[in-house]
Amino acid sequence: MGNYTLPVLGFFFVLLCGGNEVHASHQYLQPEATREAIQPSRTSYHFQAPKNWLNDPNGPMYYKGIYHLFYQHNPYGAVFGKTIVWGHAISYDLINWVHLNNALYPTNAFDAKSCWSGSVTILPGQKPVILYTGLDIKNQQVQNMAMPKNLSDPFLREWKKYSHNPIMMRPDGVNKDDFRDPTTAWQGEDGKWRVLVGSLKSDRGLAVLYRSNDFKKWNMYDHPLYSEANTGIWECPDFYPISTNSREGVETSSRSPQYKYVLKASIKFRDYYTLGTYMPDVEKFTPETGFRNLRLDLRYDYGKFYASKTFFDSAKHRRILWGWINESDSSADDVKKGWSGIQSIPRAIYLSKNGRQLIQWPVEEIERLRRKHVGFKDKKLEGSSLVEIPGITASQADVEISFKLPNLKDAELMDTHSVDPQLLCSKKSAAVSSKVGPFGLLIFATKDLTEHTAVFFRIFRDRNRYVVLMCSDQSRSSLRKGVDKTTYGAFVDKDPRHEAISLRSLIDHSVIESFGGDGRVCITSRVYPTLAIDGEAHVYAFNNGSLDVVVSSLNAYSMNKASFVSNIGS
Ligand SMILES: *[C@@H]1O[C@H](CO)[C@@H](O)[C@H](O)[C@H]1NC(C)=O
Ligand SMILES: *[C@@H]1O[C@H](CO)[C@@H](O)[C@H](O)[C@H]1NC(C)=O
Ligand SMILES: *[C@@H]1O[C@H](CO)[C@@H](O)[C@H](O)[C@H]1NC(C)=O
Image (tube, rainbow, N blue to C red):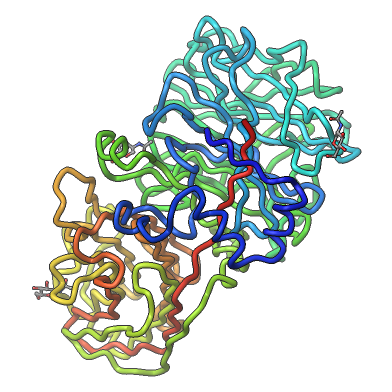
């Protein structure tokens, strides 16, 4: 790690004054002039480690005016490694960050091999506590606890481990590799604390439930909170209440008849969630959909997005979701780049009005990075046409577009109940014309479209309803071979007869985070253009259907870089 240290007051000044000073110190680590030439795929406003490997977000919290983000990190290389630690960074606005020293790293028998994922719980009296998985000296997964060394340090730089670790050992019948990732704990009206740990027991994925009176001695409850057969292991479970009548987030321990509960499990590189009800007196969670048919279950994101975690932001009364966005290139490429893995832009999440699903939207703070704006309203986009969105930095942008569909009744017929939307998107790629669609955005596009990533919609008629399919087609994103160009897709729960169909894409050099139908479907993709870089990248609105559509509104912005300052001591 570097040894660039500023006195605390100095870097407070830098943070508060923003802009130039921050960039000046950033340049010390990585000269900006050469950055793009050497690192065309390094992102400018997504969170990354200063270098090397990053995976799961850990223990996000808001504490005494500061946001903390910890993350799984290999300090020794750009690939997942034998020693994983907790990287640590702080922010005042969730966008501009200061990297601090690693917060947790192997020190004892109970975490001798690695400090794996976990969560923070803020105990009464404003005392944050970390629960995390230790890979112990015998390569067993156990659960441990750590507390800040000095609660007066506003940055909580140093953490001390509880002397009686481990505090949870795996249940009988669970393999030593299948017991990890404790959630944020919640407290019932009976005063007891509860926490979930992800696991697998004889072909059932499960969320093992532990309870405690004092947060130190934990007893496994006699049944898991929830389990399901044939899913594989549940990693990084998350469990939290969500309001049914407000967009405001609620604290993890708070209770009301107005809340539903969200249970999320990370399964085979996809983050699935189900809504449901929870009765703490009998520890019963009743899901509405469950994880029964993994193909059609609800997901946070239908692209690259895994091992996510939420926290309650008491400053703005919202629940915020972070997720790990993996690379799509090879480990050898990552070694060459010197880094791998980014975090999503944090997303505020709330329940949809009809109560059937979650809505996700980039936190409003990201809008402060918006610079130059271009826009228009009510413009016809004829069949088989495209229009450039000019004048913005197309490789570092925030683009919002809405479509109205005057010709719905001629939409293609389809029985959508039995189809896999992702497969449908790869069969009917952007290059396949139908009547209503494909229409959407061409991102990271060269002028001749040799390279482009198409994020688009297509409308089907299914009996007497209309079904909106959203796709992200990476097949022509890059001339490079050997990168994962899987096409992603999902159905959007929107009725195009009554509402415009919107798409917002956050574009940042090698990542596109797309929010379709006002945040009903999110698809994140990683792409590595070779030609559509910086000034050679363009963004277009396109309609490759045979019938006209109308762009009811377009607002596109160049984005500034976020600042990432290192305050890592030696
Ligand atoms: C705790 O942190 C405060 C604020 O940074 C500092 O003044 C104090 O010296 C620290 N105490 C110890 C024991 O390190
Ligand atoms: C990350 O991406 C690489 C390259 O596409 C892939 O081989 C690997 O399985 C992915 N891992 C996860 C956890 O998504
Ligand atoms: C539009 O469709 C035509 C064929 O109908 C195809 O050749 C072309 O590549 C498509 N454009 C895009 C951007 O996919």
